[in-house]
Image (cartoon, rainbow, N blue to C red):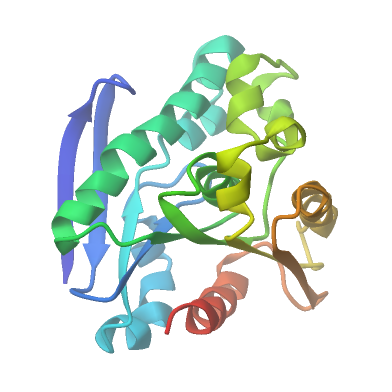
Amino acid sequence: MTVTQRWYSDRLGQDLTLARWGFAGVPLLVFPTAGGDAHEIERNELVAHLWPLIDAGRVCVYSCDSVAGQALVARRGEPAYRLWLIDQFHHAVAQEVLPAIHNDLGGGRSVVVAGASIGAFNALALLCRWPHLVGAAICMSGTYRLEPLVDGAFDDHLYYASPTHFLPGLDGPDLERLRSRFVILASGTGRWEDIGQSWAVADALGAKGVPNRVDDWGPAYDHDWPTWWQMLPTYVSEIVP
């Protein structure tokens, strides 16, 4: 059964939906792909492949609308608006979605974040920007360079939203906390995949002493849902007791 919450986000200037599958366990927030909504992972059978873990009470799965991703795919507004929205979306997740998850489960447990394609970018960004809120990130078939989706534009919003840009300058308590977290960067090398982006992220994380691992699933795995059906349950089983 799917449980859905919806509210108006002042940060985003629009409604935001949060869907839940399960009743107990470690909270797992799965970001949709670029243009997806909160129910995309259910329609594309990813929830079904996680169901043994949900049914066992090991994880409670959540997903929210990909508000910024939808704007990027549709080329909505000027590039400056899209850059602003990427940054605002991350703040909305940290300050609205994660508290809603904690309220729903009756506690402040650290959340595991995951996602594929641009969802992987969002998962990585949430962990790197708010490591006190996120315990681990599972990043699948990641798209980590968003400049092509904003017509090559760049400003402070993208700098602070993009770990490959802000990690080199990160220091202090946030970096020390981040060094106690873990990032999985998984990718195939089949159709539409670019594992080079995962290696670039691994280099940026490694240079700051952040534990991470790149897993190459090989040419049989495309940038598509059947790949993520296999990846996500595998890594959740590894991370979650």
